[in-house]
Image (cartoon, rainbow, N blue to C red; front, side, top):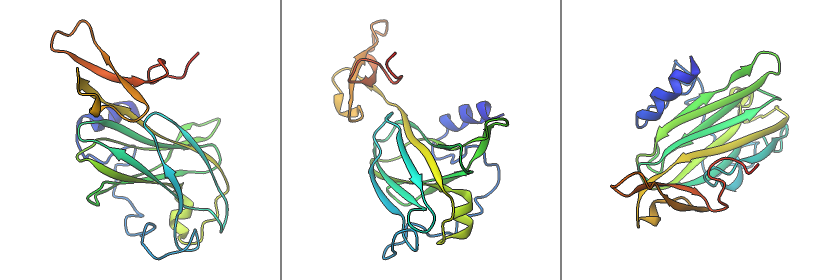
Length: 201
């Protein structure tokens, strides 16, 4: 069911759907509110999240329970924001530059290994700085008293179609690659290391 949901969500701008079919029960939790202190009232600033470059973080009770990343996006990019963990039920919230919120509480990827993943799929509607909140569902329910402990991986997977000569459309760390079978000159943005968006073998 998740596979079909992902396909649908990727085609609809601001659909805001991952696995969740109901309203976000934590929509009213203002984690990003200004003037708060780390985890006891404010998320830990984790810095920039680059396209197709996973980052690993670790939640700790009371001192680091809510992690906030920034992501520079452009209109038309198809993006998936995903948080995975084997230690707790994950939660991700993506806020657009204009303040629209999209979120998901993680499902279990596999019933045996209990790997949880939460994701938001969307076509980016505007240019600017997006914020990505990575935490656990339990921490959201107990905010501001985060109690989860363990590691997670967060990634912004981006499909950024572009046209020949329009290198500005490509995310940082990628380069334009022309599709020779397309006379219209369309191509895609690939990782500058020549490995595409997949890890090098």
